[in-house]
Image (tube, rainbow, N blue to C red; front, top):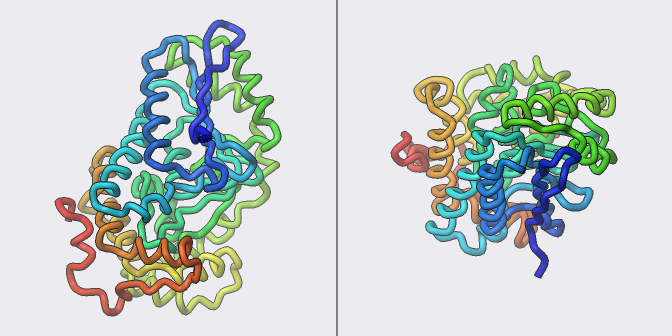
Length: 356
């Protein structure tokens, strides 16, 4: 059986090591199951206490992507409350550990970086995109919600771009990620091995200094000309107008009635139209709450909230139906439980438990 996580220590020229973690599940676009999550965490914990390890590098095997998210087929197959809660507790625990990790973590965000892959990418201190990077929080299509820390990072994007990306599951590029602060560096996708070689030449010091030393090294290879234009930037004003028309019902009407000519927005709305209205309502509530009543939530509290909501989505929401329609039967015709119009009063609050 092939190991789905590969880990090695690459020696540097000055006596330190780079810890290299490779997601090795290419048939599932490097989607991670519980075993993969636990293995990554084990390596990070070990290397955190090893003074000889200066930097961690995270990338995906093959040329298709870093990580397409969580292995939702596996979660679907064993979608009991205990399994769901266990998976999300460990997944979000890993991502919180990455956000607070003392050593620099470079994520190579080439190809598909979606869902939980965005969580791994966002938790890394040094985020690299390429010309082939394709990102999304696509949970509206499977009846989950933008999780894996998206409640935090979408909320911190300019204007209401984050709300739009969360509601629609819109796909965006490395150029968009760079333009809106979701990526730190742009480097040609064919330069990964060369880049590892350059990092191995760094004379690493202590953890604090190593962050700056890695930044300087990546900066020497940084080249935004490889990315092209940001379509999200060009749509910024129009998206904000759509997101500022009122409450969720008003936004829904505006999206459904959109007759503009922006292809990025039209593609996003096509995804939105077929998505779970329960997901949309959860996404809107989280976005609004973290701007108002829960604006002082720490990152740890946000991951705790996501754990509760995600577990309820698997147990009681549209998740099973969304996965069935998209990945099991592949009929792409999910029968969602509720529309925004017929959603019972208090239904969405049930997903939040103690966090209502």
